[in-house]
Every structure is written in structure tokens, then in C-alpha cells.
Image (cartoon, rainbow, N blue to C red; front, side):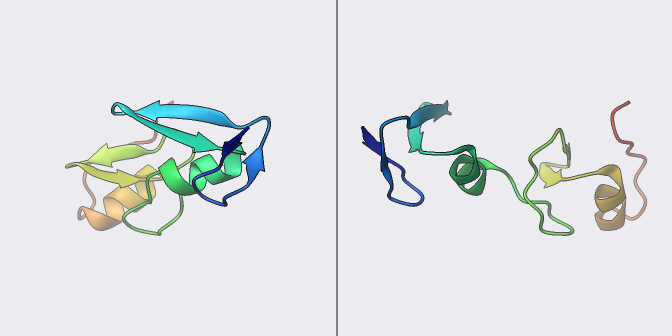
Amino acid sequence: MAVCEVCGNDYAMSFEVVAQGVTHTFDSFECAIHRMAPICEHCGVKVVGHGMTVEGQFYCCAHCARAEHDGAAVADSA
């Protein structure tokens, strides 16, 4: 068993996520998202889907990216 680094639950079915060479241990996807997902620079939601980056900043969608970058020509993926 391993302890979740977010909630502290000692869980037999925990899992590890390796990101940028660092191993993280979680007991649920909810905790993994809480710790690992980027946050939209405009509206503040956790970016769980594809999202996008503009000038190194994360956004949940093109609408938020345009709002922060004065109508920049960005579009959601088709």
C-alpha cells in the first residue's frame, strides 16, 4: 500500500504518475488532477482536457486565451 500525497489515504490500489522525472503517488484520479492539472490563467478552472498554451500560459479554451491576449488569433482544436 502507498499513501496519497494529496489526501494522505493509505490505499492498496494507489498509483504513480511520473512527470518531469518526479514520481507522485495518488489514490484517485481526483487527487491526481488536484495536484497535477494546470490552472486556466483566465477563469481559474483546472485544465483537465486538451486546453491550450499561449505565450507559455495555460488556458482551458480559446475564449479564455483570447480574453487574456487581446483577441489573439487562437482557436480550439477541431
